[in-house]
Amino acid sequence: MFGSRARRRKRILAEPFPPAWERYLEDNVAFVRRLDGAQQQRLRELIQVFVAEKTWEGCGGLELTEEMQVTVAAQACLLVLGTNEHFLDDVASILVYPTTVWAPPRRLGTFEQPRAPVSHGRTLLGEAWLGGPVVLAWDRVLADGREEGPGNLVFHELAHKLDMATGAIDGTPPLPSRAERKRWGEVCTVAYTRHRRLVEAGLPTLMDPYGATNEAEFFAVATEMYFTQPAELAHEHPALYRLLRDFYRVALPPPPPPPPAPPLPDDGSIASRFFH
Image (cartoon, rainbow, N blue to C red):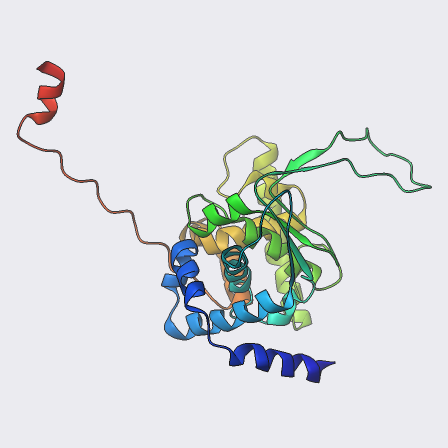
């Protein structure tokens, strides 16, 4: 099995990275420009394998394109750029919808009794299932890839898949030693408890309040912060930042500041528009 996978990947990587894919990265995935040359080349290889090996499906009337696949894959593969690409083996299929998805209420099993009122359904931008697909809303994927908002949907949902790589959903990704698992538990417990208490008290938080839902959501939200607002996370949660840096083994420099606004004209033209 492993030999056939290696041979298949060797064939995939024997193909050059398509020029059109380079344009998709340039247009849609802003962080690529902040990686060094070796990291960019490794990311291209991961993208080629990810696009080829995963099952892709456009849903809700969406016509899936290579641009969508590459844009998703680049963001997903950043999470394993410095660590183990096999952590994403649980990602078998990716379902891409054009925009926010309405999920109907889950049907109860034959012998299952409701523990709470049955929901009438919910809307979602993304979702990840243990042993199942990743669901993504394309408009949000594109906006986040271009860094037009504070978070990142793909980072969040693929962080859940890293968490699930252990076979459990508890906010702890695969770690190589007992000592590292102990450190992970200690650091995350302190940071999660603090975050949850702030949210429960109605106080403002750097991290999305959704991270107070449970340990799994905290890890996903922390991953978003680590890659999208690293300086802020390092300042607010230094121990958590160092923990994530040691796990992901790749750190993005913050995006460059926006260009300064052009100077106002000093010829009276603004005033003339109001007092002409």
